[in-house]
Length: 392
Ligand SMILES: Cc1ncc(COP(=O)(O)O)c(C=O)c1O
Image (tube, rainbow, N blue to C red; front, side, top):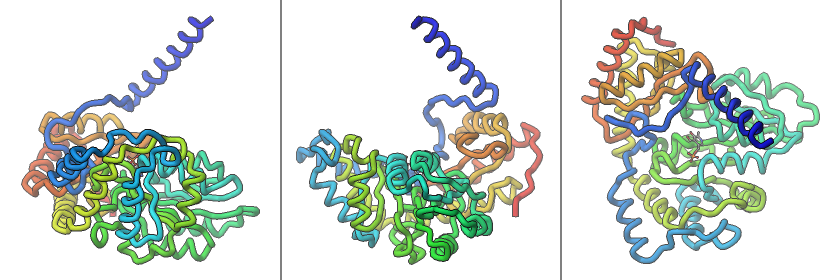
């Protein structure tokens, strides 16, 4: 009996893996060789000596290496509350709550706050953690085309009879497109149609806005946004995610967000690292300026060379190649040329929009970006790929 079940399962898995392989969608784990052009360590802090020192000295002083339980049981070291107070003060929010990852923050808060009977409007470019959180919420979902505010308004205007509450969820800088949400428009629409707004700042925190406090802070509209989400594994070079919200919402999430409640807290040394990271990031204007200049430089070079890089202006530069096979081939040839860039394919992005996602960091140089662009041009010639029209 068990043999039959095992072989059925095995056949199913084989079939699925074969189908992925036939569509050039089979992923394999591997290390990046050469220049890393796909890291989210935007400010280059992942091996910063100041962070190492903060950690080394905390460990030498005896900070535990395990948290021993979830925050509601034994895992709530004082350092977590100190970190959350520091974050709330830094961000100018009433309160902050630290989750173990951006994924668990989005899944936990969206599934706790949004209920069946609510309706939620979600940008088509939103991250998988938002999609999964919304699925778990059981609410009715309206997915609007990426950044299409007219369509969003048309949907909001519809009469969702019986909808208890409306929500709009968006990233601020989009992880796969490198473009920005029009926050002022989103806030205006949320006001007009009595919706609550939730913004994920994963790729903006540390990188954009005054002291790197991201785009909501830069917009001056924080008071009109219910929750902002700040994953810390990117420019903050750490792990976990802080959520900024009111004191009441924090209390609600502590009691209702299942990913917060039913998961062991991160080790307290992580809080030490993140306290140091926030201080460093607040003072990293030079790195932010360098990053912005590198992004503008690369975008100009790629546009001049006729690559389709979309409409963004940030440190995330998508190079649209269309089909999966071509994206995989370009990434492999770039690897041979000494550049580590990953092909991004469905389901991470819509079918037909496979791309290389170049993510820059402040430690790169313009010389290197010139060499990278030249390598890309040679690959395009070698592969006999026509020059793409640049999208307006
Ligand atoms: C927009 C966005 N939100 C959330 C996450 C998840 O964050 P984490 O990696 O901390 O789980 C990511 C990660 O790529 C992201 O891009």
